[in-house]
Image (cartoon, rainbow, N blue to C red; front, side, top):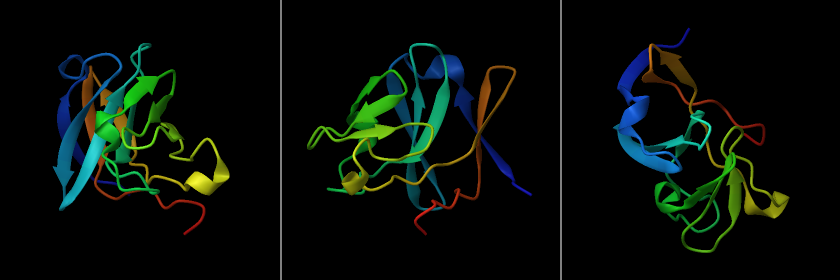
Length: 110
């Protein structure tokens, strides 16, 4: 069973933007899409350690600011299999408030 950490309101994150949260010593990027979907990934590109929170959000993806590799926000998977996979964090929305699960999801490759 997950414990939840309240992060912010959905309106606190700009559309097509991100907010960084430090959770248990790990930087987590919380993204908001143009359609007001919310996703969370560890703020670290698995390929070059770039800060995904500073990348360009388009659709349900983010492009790493260091090398433009694209990662799917819902799964963390790279658009190309050789790009690796960013760790995802489960999100819960309750009355426009965003909560993060305190335990990251395990990726399929782990």
